[in-house]
Image 1: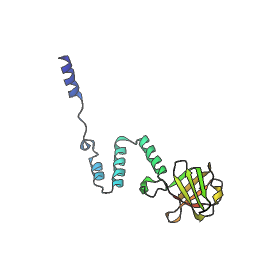
Image 2: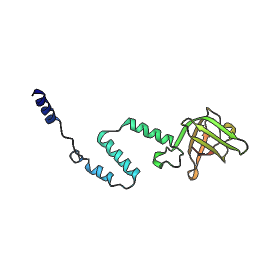
Image 3: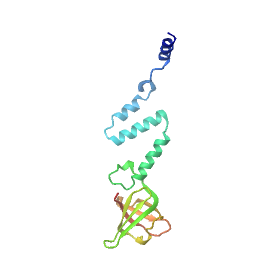
Amino acid sequence: MLRLFGLAALVLATPVGLSAQETGNDALLLECRAMEKNAQRLDCFDEAMNSIFGVDEVAEAEREELRRDNFGNPVADEQDRADRYDGTITHVDFNQSYNILRFQLDNGSVWEAMSSGSLRYGFFQPGEKVTIEKGALGRLKLSIAGKRGWRGVKRID
């Protein structure tokens, strides 16, 4: 009998969950729900949740890592890609027969050097610090720390 009384007291003491209307955030959430594009709707919901509960540092760090890993990936959404990438070359493969230079960066992405630019192929060595950023017409250009010039690149994997 005492157990039953304790259980009843616990159930009655548990607060009923607040609805969005009671918290005053219903208009913000409904505005997000009305958006047609998935990416915009998700961004809106993220902003709404941040305003309600505060910023989730872990989620923000994961998003930034995703943007960094998606840099140069043509199939990733624009908002899921970083504007530039700073990293290190981990592997270089040069095919002399076809004059093709491919290299891998520290995030596992594989890139190919294009014919545009003045940076020599000999500068591409494992351990070199590189910066890849957008150039003219949305093309990507790579520069190596301590070296003059740049080379056009494209991500192939």
